[in-house]
Image (tube, rainbow, N blue to C red; front, side, top):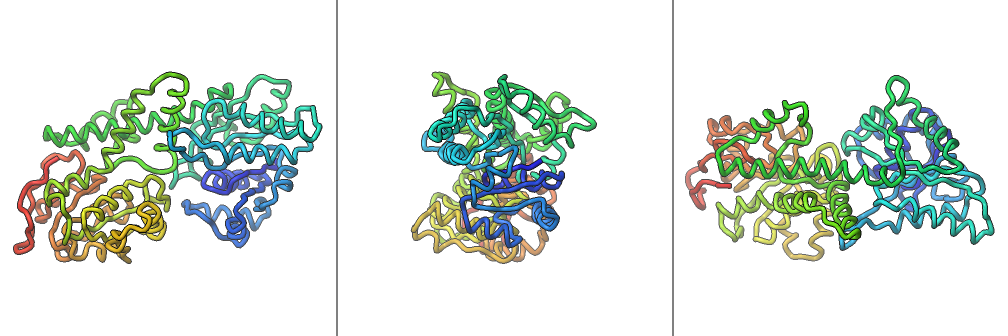
Length: 472
């Protein structure tokens, strides 16, 4: 099939690359000429494992093309995906200006029937608004006949594993309302995704509004698991229990499962924070409250500051003269995405309290520096932040090491080298990567999230600023 995808971001490029891999003829359009030029020059504006190879192969075989020409893209695609951003507005609701602008542009160029697919994460009722934009443009051109059907096909892609998620989906949700075009649209979408339904029917058909809400409900459920486990971890610190044992104990229950049960410094990224806020605001617009989801947001905001709180409990409010190493900037491993990353909150708080911060991330270093600069604007505290070439360089002469992102390269560091390198051997493990007993045996003070047997500080002689236990 001939497919057009509007938006060359994470969702658009992964969707385009994977559909091309299945043999479809794909055209991606983006209004950013520099981005399109990069793509046409065999580059990528984002990082996603395996995406470069996928694009290179399908570009060479002529199955994927990139353009800024909307008229060309509308003419090309039997099915046109809208995959542009829906950032949060100040009240938390989804900003649909890009989605509706794309709908208007498509309407200006429609000449024959097309299936218009909302791939972007959008609130309930967006399909109707897209339909109205399209119809208004057709009426301006004097066209009365229906040349489109708007449906919902939300994405369920995890950054860092997006290609695997697309090519091996556990479900494909399609929202399609009853209309004279129902049979035609149903057949086209069945054909589009036929590769995934050969041995097992993965497509779940429903009405459009239910499909729109399904995406928000799924992300809110996963965010809830994360915040719940973080609350249990914080309680474990107070009670002397171990969250890792608890995680394994409840995860063995088949009704619960093991996914999204890891305690840490809170969730970030482009989906969970934005989608939970949008769901909360959607309910408020209906005169209702999402009490559980609101609590999930509040817990997550608190969790992002937990490591800083623990440093304050040990060093006091003023961090002047102290240096802290931060391992990990991206909101999760295997991506360079800095959107809503906990590291930004942590580093901002450290800098504002007078600390020197050295950070290392194997992939998102420059993206992290840019995001921090945007967050702090022209603040003088930025001069106290620097990027390091290696993890051990960041830890040199540090009074504490904060592990923020669970990159695999951080899983098994040389602890003896860290002890020799750091001014004070103190590790605040925001992802529970290390075994507390092992670090105790090495003479390293350690604080995880909800880990049993939190240790008294055991610094090198002559470097101790304050001898105390770090408590939850």
